[in-house]
Image (cartoon, rainbow, N blue to C red; front, side, top):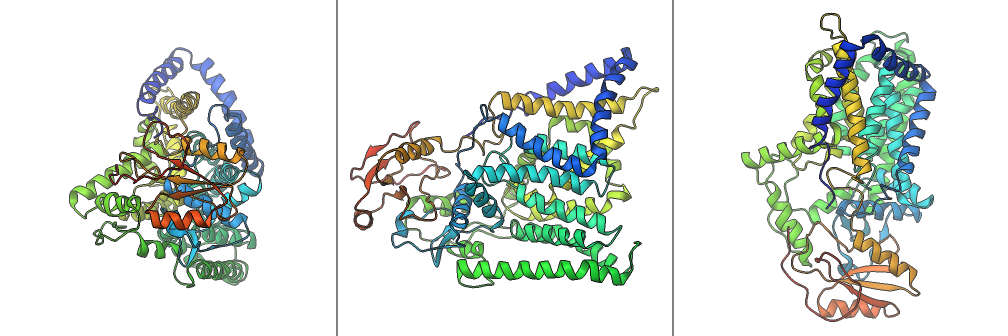
Length: 566
């Protein structure tokens, strides 16, 4: 599924060529080449000095560029299990509900990452679903993704402005936008990390401002950032918030320099922030109660108890096999998930290398190798020491999990790009015999990324990992065909033996009974008879995923294959 990463094969060569060309210009035409780049950089710096305006400008640029690329990179089709679960959540919220009642025919609809008892709902925290619901109300859930990614890039600029000069903060946002907002699954799918990245950026930026001056507005932004993290990536939020909380409370009790008095800090910062966080915890308890029936039991915990058989953390072992009512869930949870990690040194090494490889594709590009020496100086800067420690805390949390999705690092996104631009700042100071070699190399790093992303977009690569963009295009085509037909439809999904368990077709919206198209599993004759009786007024169709193309056929009786590919 997806396309291979262009950056892994073409970009190193691009970087070498750019270095040689720019070095030749620096030595042969030092004044002319420097004059050209200075003009461009002066425009960039002048805009960056207008701190509020530049945040809005970057937001608008991200939206405009991605919309302009729609002829090449279409609105993404969902394809990953998690995407469909998030879309269910967004549809539920768009219907004005936090959860849906269990459906009487739920065994025919049972699928991955979705609860059916005591309610019909997604297992995930609600923040991403709210974004998708907002997009759905505007006409398409992906609109919510687009706006959230643009907000992430703008928030990164705003956050870094509190820790470094404005031009470097702007560059950090531009690098994030280039890497994550064009050819990345964060933009081109429904399960990326933009929402959590917004929360992390707001918290970091607000704390940086509070350390200089106690203001109610920054206290509110800090609390809102933490609230977003708790409702998007709660596990990672714990690691992220520990260093920030340590510095915050040290400042609050007057152990660090500040223009404000301890009394002002408690009144203007602690009280409003505490009120927002108390409201956040109350909301989380209410949400849990509406979905699981228990205010202190999360939907994710219910899903783990009901379905998951694999180890979630590196010190755990897989659970004993469970019984599942359909073959696909059995193959996924008892097969793929339990075999993913067995608490051996070999498995630990495998998942660690997988994390490194995937995060390299999402956050890095080969030209960054040029700034590695400068990073050793950047991490020792007292000005960004808190950012470094918070990043290390986030990496620690990520290293303890057995799964390796790069958006698990979403809370520390602004810190990653902040450290990169700090490395570029140090790199620019390097000179050889009076020649600005560091300036040339730093420009190469930025230009190589821009060229790499441009080539990927021109080749219609929505995501180098293959996780975003095209999705289950056959399913999407059938959905569009049936939506155009009169009447209501029931699509029975019967998997062929070599079908991949990672390509699940059985997902539905929040209101199954009133949906024009309903997707169901082809189970045993008894369950199918109940389902057909329940939906007796619908036209019944059959699809058999597993071939290169999946035709839509009139339903016919037949046994599903038992062998699954994973």
